[in-house]
Image 1 (spheres, rainbow, N blue to C red):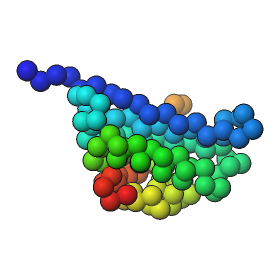
Image 2 (cartoon, one colour; image 1 turned 180 degrees about the vertical axis):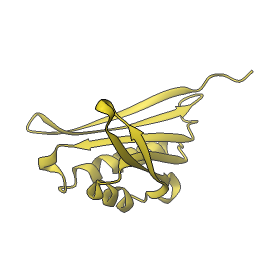
Image 3 (cartoon, rainbow, N blue to C red; image 1 turned 30 degrees about the horizontal axis):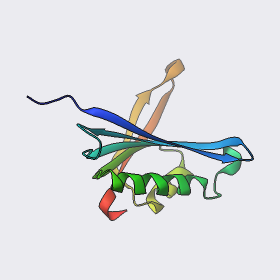
Image 4 (tube, rainbow, N blue to C red; image 1 turned 90 degrees about the vertical axis):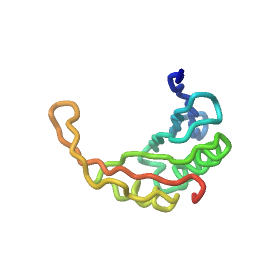
Length: 123
C-alpha cells in the first residue's frame, strides 16, 4: 500500500535591523523527511534590497538544505518580464524548462510565467 506523500517546508526570512527584507521557502514533497525528490522554491525580496545579494544568500541556503534532504530537483515559476530574478536563478544553476505559460490571476489579468528547474547535484 502506497502512502500519501507528505510536504515539508523550509522557510527563510532575511532581516535587516529587525525588519524583514526578504523571504524564501522550499516546499519538499516526500513520504518521509529526507526522501523528497522534488521541491518547489519561492522567493521575494523587498525592492530596495534587490541586487544586494539577499536573494542569492537565501537561495544558497535553501539549496544546501535541499542537498541535505536529498532533493533531486527544484522547480520554480517566474514572471517572464522579471529579468533580474531570471538572472539570479540562472546564476544559481536554474535553466528554463517551459517557456511562457499564460496564467490568469486576479482581476482577469494574464501574466506570462516561465518555469525553471535545477538538478540539485549540479547546483
